[in-house]
Length: 492
Ligand code: NAD
Image (tube, rainbow, N blue to C red; front, side, top):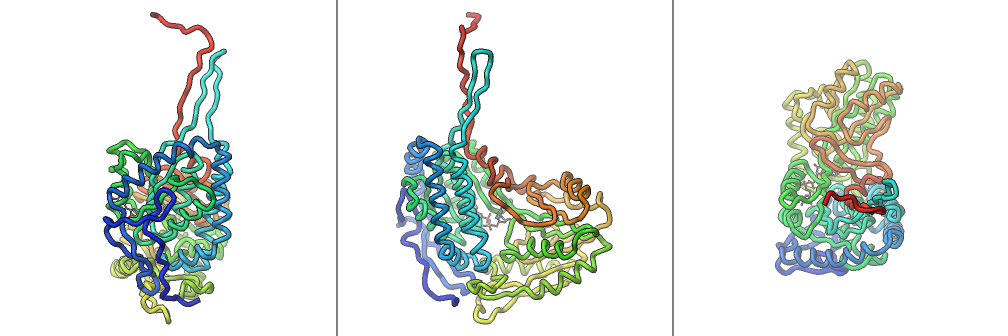
């Protein structure tokens, strides 16, 4: 498939109260194709007055949405899941154009993950409720109630999936949502709004506003908003938590990482290599949970590198719309330059370049932001590439000797999003995992995130969990009701 110059210009920039709307007062913004650099959509950021209008519409819609039964809400979410599956190819092509991620990935990991999420939360919407506890003849019961209007703010690496991961539990609990996609990838969230409408979602329950930090910040501080869930960098997460604190809103923070992936000498080495590649090069390395600090036990270091190097060198870079392509460009020129700068720092600080280490030029996609899959060995804990999140296709391989040592070094970071352990010894696997300060962990695999499993980070990588039953706790609140069946005991 060639990259056509055809625009994917949406009918308007925003989706408010069940229809596309433009905002004459909004600041202009553009969406660029990651491969050609061409403008594929002209949009505008939401002005303060449109944000106010959207919050009012969402608040009104939320009350009647919450008054439906969970079964009725769930039916609409499951219908949306079916529509997403029917349109998976169209949605995947749009996502590939906006993000640069290869179609072979977006076809299986983006819209379909969103559909799974809507199906899951559609399925459990009817079970969201409280409990009854007897106190003699009296009793109390709890009601699990929605929060109101929730704001979702997305990053650019999984735009459609992130929108679904936030909307599905929020809507299942009877909330309304205003979603602000990343300004870098603004398009697919609008498609989700269209699909919700077709599935029968009442107008105003799911809205999309475009914009960058200023729009996000206004939404976070808005007094009509009850909760914020953001996926983004640690620096942005801190600003959002601070802004939300002004009006005491609860926040869910899905932030960055520098996760350890530990390979013990007794591991199946082919599986460990496959896991390390999956955990570093999928989506050109633009995955928050990536295991970018690969700790390999000294006895198997050279075997690991010998197996890894040719497989990395063989990764097929190309036009991301070609289904054979295994790695596409990075999302933007600024992100490409940031990653290249880290690669240069790695070289200067003395890491050994095993593979890649430069820009890649792909015939027919000369303007694309491609970087070679890059592996550094002999990385030490103090090097910049071992400490900071790069968010590109750069793997750092570190060497360790003992179990105690690797646990201590793996935990020696402000991040705590994810971790992986490769070993054939059960005691090592579970013992090490129990001591790692990370919210989402894998044994003998990496980056598998089914909707049934809670996902999220510890320490600076975030708070709260997405997916699974636990997400319900973050989009609802408990009301306790005590019912006196006897005579009221009172000293007065
Ligand atoms: P970013 O922090 O630059 O932006 C994220 C979103 O926040 C964007 O929509 C942006 O417009 C908005 N924003 C920026 N400043 C804001 C402010 N002051 N108030 C409100 N909103 C604001 O992140 P990015 O570059 O889009 O994405 C990459 C980062 O996201 C990486 O650090 C990555 O690890 C992280 N990420 C985390 C997860 C996770 O689930 N933990 C998933 C994907 C990406």
